[in-house]
Length: 291
Length: 258
Ligand SMILES: Nc1ncnc2c1ncn2[C@@H]1O[C@H](COP(=O)(O)OP(=O)(O)OP(=O)(O)O)[C@@H](O)[C@H]1O
Ligand SMILES: [Mg+2]
Image 1 (cartoon, rainbow over the protein chains, first blue to last red):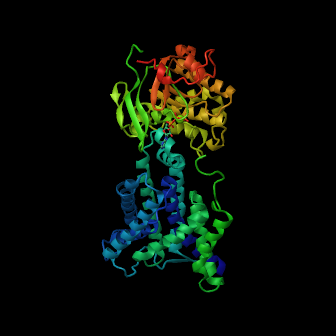
Image 2: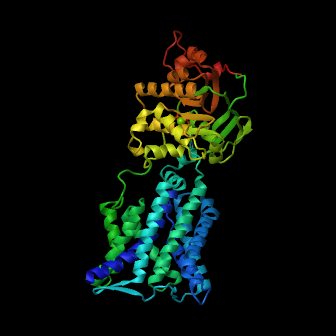
Image 3: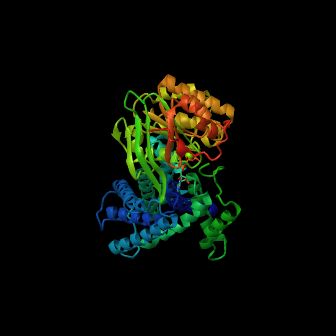
């Protein structure tokens, strides 16, 4: 029973890592550079939701606030790409990476300035609501996190596989030059990818906030999600989610059965192991990009 | 050369890669319903010319006219919308999309309801693609990928189709097959084409009119049958040696155009 309990908690945190990792991979696939502000975008999404929902602030209904927050963060993601990242078009990749690190700092600073550095809790409809099944305690927050992740995964799958825009995003990530020749507005598509990354980051942020307090430095969690993305192969969306789940599940078990401190190291140790044994990730596609 | 105004025309086009001048004043015309070929050795600037026409590269000077309207400097997607599709050098298929998805990407800019019938049209010219509708493009052979790339270009239903070395890396037999289809597409579907090739023999037989390009310039132009008979072409592109050994011959001496 204890194992089941640990597993459940692990899956729930894994969903959060997985969604942030998804953002990393989305942007990497589209632009071939890593957005190190992904974790901070999650943080900002969480705080925007807090601003909308909490009674100390605007007190909007929870289920109205979430889509609103997603929309706001999507717009912020699009704007970041269009106004800042796009200006570096044609520059070396590391310039973009450094820029995203800087954006992360700025977002953290802005959040600290607006909402302060004290941890705050998001008022969700399911604080302290639990379901019990013969000894197994399932928190409503866990149900929420897992359910929303499943739903979002399904939506993203349908979007990428079934819509013209989603197909164009896939195409642009597989062969940018050819996408230009097909008449795909590649730059605008990259902006939309950042918008999606902003939206998924918000969902991850709300999930995180549903399970604990948030503060402006919570975005550092992004590093763990980065490890998840590496484990998943950094080129595959399902891989990112699974990588997140693996890390999420390993952590509580390492904490429970390992020596103190193990749980903090475990994700990165696993990442190193994967990099050594299977450099393209556990779920790497058989073929490398751009044949 | 044409009685009607050309579909595509470039006037004194100049383009650079950094400080390197890759196009040094290129003027060509492609009349409606014709195949015009651009011949030239490696590094002559053929691909650069096509990239500039497609808007992937901006020209420094000169004009590109599509049906008389200037289009130079426009975004690539705007140019596709106006009716110029390209089958790029080296196929450039979308490796993880399947055959049908690749073809549908070709129709990305279209919103009419004839996409389905055009898909059938492409399959009728390339039955091999129909057999592999669900196969991922990255696992097709080079020749199959070339057919896919041509089919994808057709799906845009362009006013002019730019083809960059469709014979690249294909067996002589497959080259014949693909050029037969290119010719059929031109006569049966009326597709206007600009065909860049190094394989002068096969290109001059398929096309109506030809230009020869060398280091960023057009050095020769003419009807294809005239070019085929020309000694220069025979010597430098068809590998036929003339009786008089002209070892140091340069195109410059023989600039027969204009
Ligand atoms: N991206 C680039 N950056 C710098 N120089 C380039 C670039 N692409 C091409 N060039 C140069 O421009 C010139 C023309 O190249 P281009 O690719 O247009 O030749 P091409 O006629 O298509 O040759 P090929 O038959 O080998 O495809 C060459 O000298 C080439 O080295
Ligand atoms: Mg070329």
